Image (cartoon, rainbow, N blue to C red; front, side):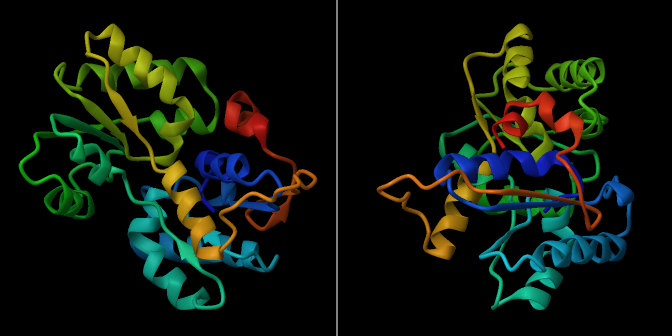
Length: 250
C-alpha cells in the first residue's frame, strides 16, 4: 500500500523474489498527496487503503510509503496484527552509514529535518557526516511520470548534494523508480562513484521471511496474479506506472 505508485518498487522486488506471488496493490489517488495532510488524516487514509487490501486476505501487508510508515504504522498494526503482519518502510540510513560517510539523504521536504528522520540519524549514523537534501516536487513528478519535472527536481537535489558524498539514501519510495536518473545526475555534478540505498529489496526480503515464503519453488509455478485497487476500486495499473521498469515488470 501507498498513497500512489511509490509501491511499485517494493511490489517489483517481491515479484523478482517470488514470480508466483499474488500481489494486491492498494493506493489512494483520491486522497493524494498525503504529505501535506495532518498525521490524523494520513492515518485515516492509510487505514482505508490497508483495509481495502486486507479484504483480499493477503499473507502480509507492506506499507510501501515512508509518510504512512512515519505516521500510521502503529495504528495499522493495532488494527490488523497479529492476523495480518504489517511491514513498514524505513529509509536505509543504517546500511548507508555502515559504509562510512559522508552520506546524503534525499527525502520529501516534510520528512527532511523531521524528528523521525533526525532520530534515525542519531540512532544509526552517529559519527558519520550526514546531509539532509529536500527534494521538492520529485515524488509528484514521479507519480505522474512527468519527465521534464523529474529531471528538474533531480538536478536541483543533485546540486544540493555534497560532492564528496559516498552514498545517497533514497528516503521516499517514489525515488527508487528513478534511481538510475539520480545516479546519472550526481555523476554530472562531479560526484565520485557512490552507492544508492533504497528500501524495496530489504522490505521484500523481510516480508518473505515474516510469511515463511522466502524460498522460490523448485518447480516454477505460473506467474502470480496482480490486483490493483485505486482508493478501494478495482482498476487497471495506472498508465504512469508503465513508464517505469517496475511497472512494466508487474
